[in-house]
Length: 347
Ligand SMILES: [Zn+2]
Ligand SMILES: [Zn+2]
Image (cartoon, protein in one colour):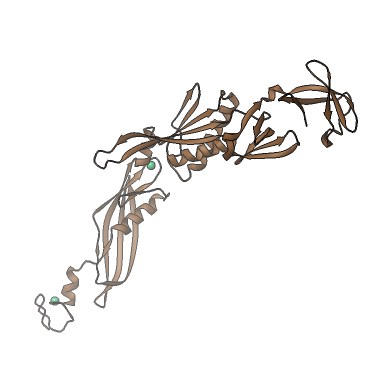
């Protein structure tokens, strides 16, 4: 065959020209002269193909990936080996080499290209939200029919912080830009709704209580008609506290603590353990505070009766002897609570 470009007649033809003429103009790779990568200077996440990815990647690796993404290898190339190299860093610009060895039409050829990758430091949308104090949820920490104690606020602050630290591994908006200290309780502003809900759950686990969410429409996107909501989450902790007496399903229970999803207590009639699931919170009624507990003395005992001194009028009160009272001695101090004209000895 005759090559119209070089006039040779004895070479392998590729299309209309001989292999040598074909390879003279052939480019194995296409690569832009300059590649830009955006990196958030706060959290190191980077913008790739329009999306911010949060995984932490060393700068070198970011450059290599940017090169890989931007190299286009021609379809005619086979068995290619591509070498990427960062020649040198000049400030935020990496001068790079791309070397390729591949086969085209049965001939092995080599090609080298130069490019630069510029790293642009910017602020990702999440970090700019954090900087502007953005929040999606407000946790309203309140108590039922009483004021919240200083220790309870301190504990709540600690729980909020601990939960957010834990959440921040997965959620960059797990932060609290503001705490509003109101007379009725604290309002914790939380960056994301997801983390806000975790905080509310953690508070509930510690204090018991009820969680209620109420969304409020903040603004509306005119073009889509979609509303932007902010969620208020109220965590209402119970009126009763540890050592108080509550009524639940006709039992009188002294509260000993709250764990996970239940109130742990003791039935003061039977002196047996009695737990109440937190989902029954609304049916728990406070009947006596721990400050109503009185102290008195055992004055006599028999197999059937334990006699104590009434701490108010000093009369003798007979109580039915129970297994738990057998070890009490005459003259010993005991604690009692009076509920509905009945005196209960406490363990
Ligand atoms: Zn030719
Ligand atoms: Zn960021």
